Image 1 (cartoon, rainbow, N blue to C red):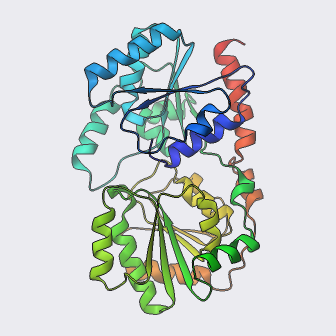
Image 2 (spheres, one colour):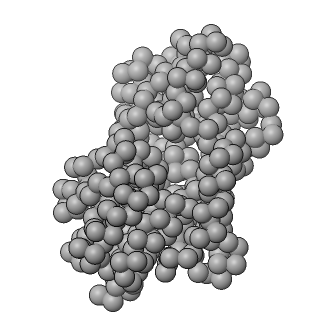
Image 3 (cartoon, rainbow, N blue to C red):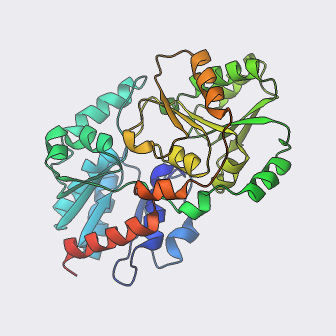
Length: 357
């Protein structure tokens, strides 16, 4: 667990499923860096810590013991192509319903990771009885075009609490005052500092925006292994007084309110839930064309190719902000299936069908 989009979606669904009939045990790797214990346990959920998947012998041994002792009727794996590992243990333990969820795809700049992803993808359906994904693109990537086109893959969007992210002018004023950004043009981004999120290019885009608007400030929410490298690039470009590293925050919805535009140039995404959250907050949102079509939920969204230059991205961002009026975009997101209360009710019924209850 890393306080990312997958974790946020999982906990959102858990909050609203029918816990009078359905309860979760959360089995997590011991190298998890952010475990929201209160959210996971206050409604009866249990946290079970196991060795990380890289230690396969210990990992499989721990899972087999847990599965055979607890006699679960269903195991739901949220770890993309890695799901083959826990679902093998579930199959070996005789658990009848085994769900694999695809939350991602693959992209450039990650050779070794991609070798592993593409290899494990070959076994994505071997031990799973149910196939799920957060988008059509993510489903097709892991389970194949034939499974996707046949309707075998069930789409569970990374739905959110819409009212939590809806535009709120009072919160906007409060946050801009708190951050001392009242007179600034605020560019925002949220994502783990990893190759996938393409922070290097993001900094180049912001440098172009800063040349055009000297009052521009960049807010970066998240942490990760590349944070120091990105911080050095910011300093080398002389932008350290205009870039704020927020670290991992638990109230990201408030920071969206303070922003004026959201930029998300990822190399790949299964969905890119932060882009949806930003749109709900009424933000002009510029994303790469590598995001699936489901990420586009409002008129304030633009998809730009990563083949375009940083200057072209910056120009597109500033154009989208011209004459833009912030407003709550919850209804648009609800129409696209991103209301977690509605989706959790559907998921509860899905569990009933799978489990015969």
